[in-house]
Image (cartoon, rainbow, N blue to C red):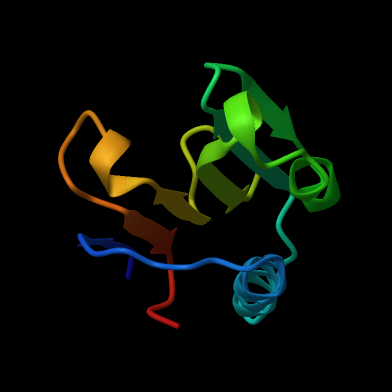
Length: 117
């Protein structure tokens, strides 16, 4: 049985570094419950000045200066099985809802896998 869950939230939030790390760890733990570790992890940040930072390491994004023109407007992480198309994948995105060109969505996530867990 294949599961594909997507959910969006349209209200503000405060995301601390500690909470972001905890969420990434929770997703990694959930992924490993399927009997496999994620093959690929990608963390992406979009800055106010238009720069896009991508890395496989969460620390590369969290160590960015987060003020002025380098203010982080969007941060997203994705864990997947390294296949294309993905049989299993977790994606979580946080963004400034006012700056979202697609609407007021500030948090959204998507989970694809064989298990509802």
